[in-house]
Length: 482
Image (tube, rainbow, N blue to C red):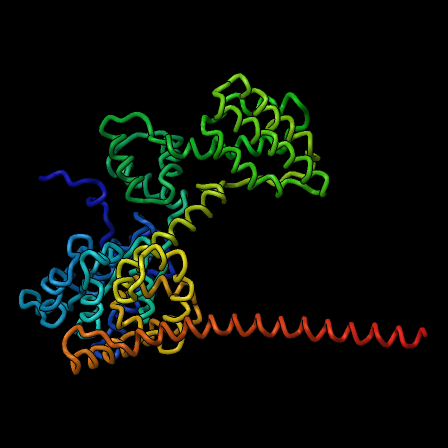
């Protein structure tokens, strides 16, 4: 008999064997149990991190309800042709080898569908959802993925959110598996495995199996590193004297700038009065100056002064009685996040610029640095969807513009606009550009420029009127005096 991996060996085969996420599992069960062709919504989307039970729940419920599953992994079928090849026939015709069973399509990891460089995969999948004769269950890990947002907006697809399991649920299942395998393992090690998995049940089972076959240590390197800085900060902010604060950074991390920026983010939450805020951030500023000098001169002998400012300097600047325990630090300091957001927006502007600048007859640099803001207003404004369609912007570009201007109806109007532009091109000849749409962009820009000029002229007229009024009042004052 083949030895299956424990993840497969102990995969739940019934709804009653599933662990955690009770509410969403019941909703998924009801969706599949009551599903009827043309009377029910075709697809349902399961969102959640890896290892939380999305795929296992689908298989277990399908077995209970006598469904046969046809599974397609979106990461392996990314293009329009591949999606069509794998799903078109499956979604329209019943499998003859399972005539007595209902059919279900499982589209796993749908956030793996491709974008600009392999166009059409997502659109083809949406078309299949519209015509499918069978229910479709989609799973995805990243709820913020552009493709997931497009799918939700355009199809108004029902979405169920799966959460990570808590460590007690994970540990309970690990104990059952260890008992079935006659594996004697102490409770502390089991607890460590459950805690280190961060709610990923698949990872915790794999860790238990590797422990069974000879590994005697649990891989906690990443978790320990994340906890060290949090513990250091908590010890610093509750330190009562110089010596306690000085001892905090005995085993300090070697990434000094992220440490300082994390401290900058957390310090204000630990201060009660304006004076404490001033004194605390003065010490952070001094530490920043020391660190800058170290980086410039490579004089690492100054490092002790850096830790003096961010150790005893901060601890003695505030009342230790006022202390807010830090549960978990963000992965990145806020300053890094802001830089990343700005860079990300700049990259997306460049991405759109590649498509639109040839038709707008301007350089990409001018578009990114001078025209991008006004461009977003035009495309998300009146008749903006027609301009977007004429420029051949894809769904990812449109989603970016929609995020910049959330009140816009761009995504709702784009399909009709594409049909309109397509009809114009058909009449005028394939891929012939419409001067009307180009003129709309130019006229909008000129209107804004004229508005600015008109505003300036009005301001100048007001100044002249005020000057004349002051002269008149001054003359009256002189007449009254004499």
